[in-house]
Image 1 (cartoon, rainbow, N blue to C red):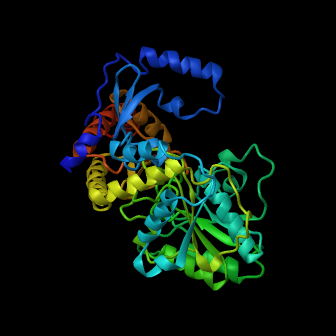
Image 2 (image 1 turned 45 degrees about the horizontal axis):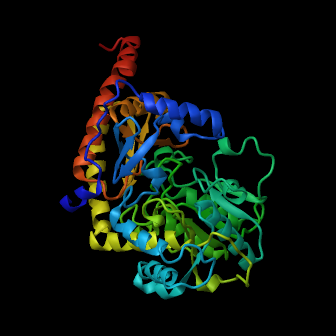
Image 3 (image 1 turned 135 degrees about the vertical axis):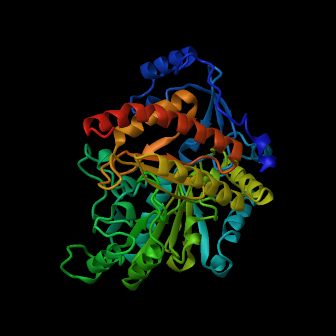
Length: 470
């Protein structure tokens, strides 16, 4: 869409430093290592110091331009520094910034926008509650609401799921890397397999699959000797993010919800990353026939990076009493204004349709690469939430994180930023702004192609020599 071009700093990468990081970035990265806590992570794999950003382009302090397919970890849905949204921000800053949970026209308008964007047939069934500024806050609130409503304590989560870093959110996150040094989190959390068809834990394929993962979940709830007491809730991402941008099999979510509801278990969909038009629809569950009881939101709802989070939940499970859940920074008025601006921008520029079409275009380009590269095992995704899984062999599917690590460095040196995830850190995760233009996509694909050539020389030729395939 030509109209979106003006919302970007440029439409391609531009590396002017002789090597990366550039000299000015090196100085700031060194200072950061000396005075900021050692938990800093992103600059370790993307070592730049940022000066400014607009749209899908980041400029570092050395003047290098990078294509941002990381999107602030899925936050910048309408791009960096979108001036359309900033007008809403400036207007709000001049009037009111902090208002606790008092009613304002600004906040109530946003709530109405959120509900209006739900499917028409269920809009009247839901209400909205704001929490602290992060996705983790929303997860904590959802778990608390489910426990209060049901009077039960347990939670069932899903393998590959990521829900945050606070105690409750981390307890329902499956990656043990984040938990192996902690002796206690919230108790009574159990995990069941997610619908990860490329690596089915039941050794099925698309032809033989009979939703064994759903049957296993149902058996757990049906059987008194499963060892798991009926929980208060289940929590899952309708499209997994950190787990590898995993799209579940069609029909999976609907069946999981039906099983949970049969047992009176509340269903929480974590839409922190998949929400706010990331997959085309307002929320990913709207691409399915599954209807959750609670939806957590954050990230993209802030439009251009303003912190906001909350719950969209059925009125039928309302269980809060006055002050049962509070938070000083819930519903910050500036973040709310940014969300309103992002909603209006998306409607005016028809970003819902555009995100689907540009995402399809990107996936098509990547699937062409898949046919040409022996190490790309799977390309998957919806809208602008795409995963590329790298393997040593397409038949055995042995993970190949070493290859992706090298590929990421080569892409970085040419000006493309992306995140790595997946069960084995072998998945290229692409979550760029939804306003990314076709020219930017083409430039990113060209960088990936160039980087693949270098990586092929390092990994493929020795393999061929070793196996005497010449």
